[in-house]
Length: 146
Image 1 (cartoon, rainbow, N blue to C red):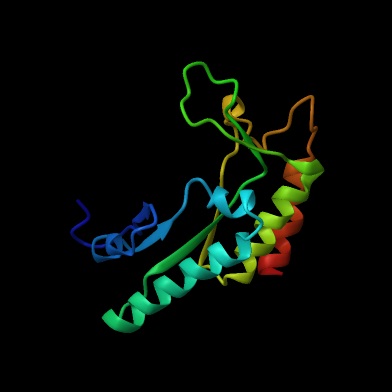
Image 2: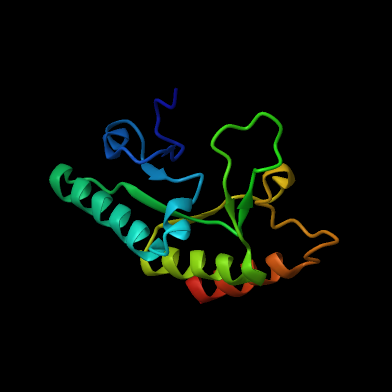
C-alpha cells in the first residue's frame, strides 16, 4: 500500500500487536473509560508505557497518539446499544483529557472530534458552546508545544 514508506500509518485500538504493521496506535474514543472512572492520566500513561516497551523490545520508533475528548453523549442516538454519556462539565472534561494526554508525552494528540454532533463530541463552534472548545484547543495545544 505504501511501498516507499512515505506516510505514517496509525491504527485505532488497544492492542499493541497492531504495531507490527502500523507506525503507531491511537484511541479514537480517547480512552473514554479513563474519563468515566477518573483515571484518564493512568490510561494514557499506560499506553505510552506499552508503546515504549514495544519500541525497546523491537528497536523501533512507534508512535503513541494520545486522544482528547470534550465530552460524549450518544444516549439519544436511535437504536444505539451500550450508549453512554461523558458530561462536558463546562470544559473541565476536555481540559482533564488534555492534561492526561500531555502528561503521557505523546508524539501526537488526536481530537475526538471536530463535528460529531449526533454523539455530542464536537468542538466545532455552535449555539450552545460558541467557540469555547476551539479556544480551549488553542490554549492546550500551545501548552503542549509552547
